[in-house]
Length: 285
Length: 253
Image (tube, rainbow over all chains, first blue to last red; front, top):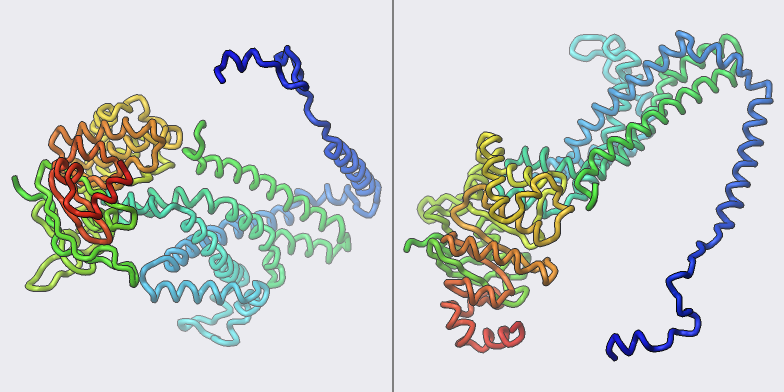
């Protein structure tokens, strides 16, 4: 049938002659609206109860929120997180490279490390390191208790734990890079080092950043576990206060709000890091 | 003319599957060799052994007078350290079926990367050379684009410019148009033809019979890990001597 005869043929019964002027009405999203109202009501009830329940003692929260002790604890939590993340990912990247290496010895060692340190709960590990003096009273002629204070133990324990997980995150990122990328770099004569830093890692970062962001936030909150070995982080600092004043709930609220604030800031940071590593990944920028 | 690529009794297996069963092939400098054959015939593997992306199990390959990937001492071949292999590869350009451009680098940075980091050229000089090459493949205005913003044909032309940036003595093409939409094949073949007319030595694995007829000095037909026949395109394409060549050509023509 030629286009001429097609155009002259009568339209299907549902389509009027002036199909151009039909207006399209989107489907009503009843479920969305119902859910929104329900959530708003529940949220209102929750906020109301939190604000009106005197036991929260918001005035006490305000008093301690920026007190020296709390800020010192917050500062320790922040730098401990930074140190553990940095060392953990540095060691994790080495372990991942080992896991993917052609060298069977390196592969086995990396596998063994990840297996061991993922098997031991972090709490158990911290307590073991804290009591390592019982196994080795002296290290290189120095008393172990003097060498390994609580903060050092916290850094060692958290880093070793973190590295085991970071290794898997980095390995996953590297595996997500197309094999053809490495071949192209080899065909161009790029050195191993250059292939790794210029070609593979920047592309792997796209897959590494989201779980790494997860781990960073997990580590930030996870550092609170060091309170069991008397390291004065954010949680231990508020505990010290409420052991003295018995204002348990308001001081826990101080910690809660600070953890939430820092986590939110990190989430914003993650958004921009992801955007950076996504360059070149879409048709239009 | 002198021999640029000399392949002698090359064997290669993947596990128990033997994909190259004794290949002998010579490619003279300045000539274009087109390798045809059904999929699974070993043609891509052969191409990849020439720049040592695949190691051979037996036999030897020399490019421009030097053994690829090995050093001979008496009747033994010692595998070269990676650094040496990488240096050899800078003289052999390789263009992949799927382009394999670096998606996180701009077009210009894709082309500049190898001259700067593998040949230690000053960046400024490499950028100028890269711009000339992009102009030559008709993409001077795309220098700052990212690969994903280009069509398949444009990406493959960037990949050719990237291979040329090392000023290689030999160019290898592994099915350069197989991943392209039909209407984009022509623009890539035109660039390759242009290089052929300028006397670049190249080996092209392809399914484009028309291209082989027009550009090849030698057509090689491979099947089941062996070279079945080779010769000028007029002989192999129009008057094949072997039944298997005839059967293949009747299917693709």
